[in-house]
Image 1 (tube, rainbow, N blue to C red):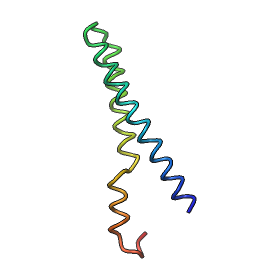
Image 2 (image 1 turned 30 degrees about the vertical axis):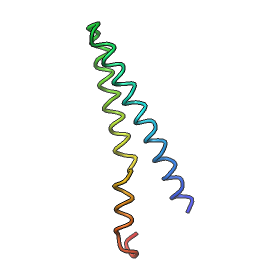
Image 3 (image 1 turned 60 degrees about the vertical axis):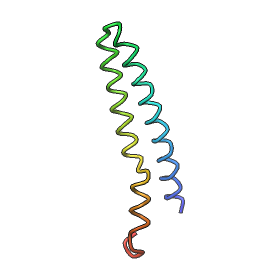
Image 4 (image 1 turned 180 degrees about the vertical axis):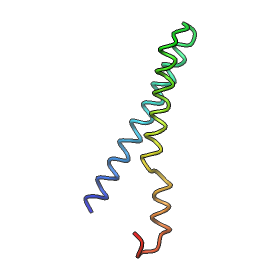
Length: 75
């Protein structure tokens, strides 16, 4: 029971961090683009990619659907 709760809380934290990383990456990318700051552009892309990875690893709806559709003996 606590393991499921810990996974749930961890998933929510990963989602929040992923969204924040994507927003920061987009803002950094577009702020650095007009200045021609290559380091800022690359960091923006890295933050966007990292946020996308965090969102993917957080599970989300796909994992909940798998658990709901799986037979009781396979969980």
